[in-house]
Image 1 (cartoon, helix red, strand yellow):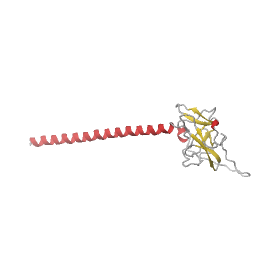
Image 2: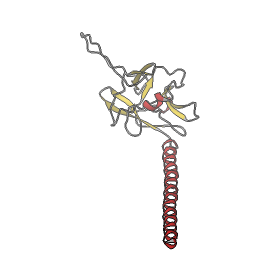
Image 3: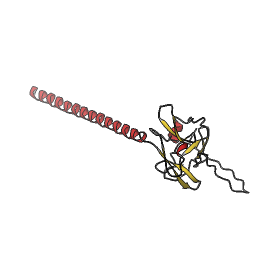
Image 4: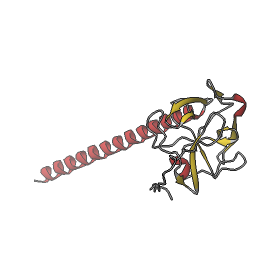
Length: 187
């Protein structure tokens, strides 16, 4: 009888060690995968900002406007002043700034003399055109979309940017009076 108790005690001890070993292996594996994921995410983020941005022109329903290297519309924020951004935090998540590590380049029709950069509060360089900081809009999922045009969010309106560096404002049809209400998910 005593021998059976000792065997059960040994078996329980062996099972407990196996469970503990599995947990340690699982936690170690989880930690290693987490570190790898963090390193990969950091590498992707660095590669996205460690290049010089390219600004081009594209024909859209608004006419010729500035676009980024993916063909996505670039916007100016009416609240920005003196070449400085007024969009950070939550605003920058909805309106990601066009970043560049150095001097941005211009495609055909883009005046290189109007391209520049401004330093953001986190030290990154945001591309400017005619001293307007440039942004994309997260709801423009495909090249050429202009869903951000004339949206009022974060304290001012957003406009696509023309080749001259001016805001593109949609012309209202003559002889008609319309009221448009825009609901946005922004504060």
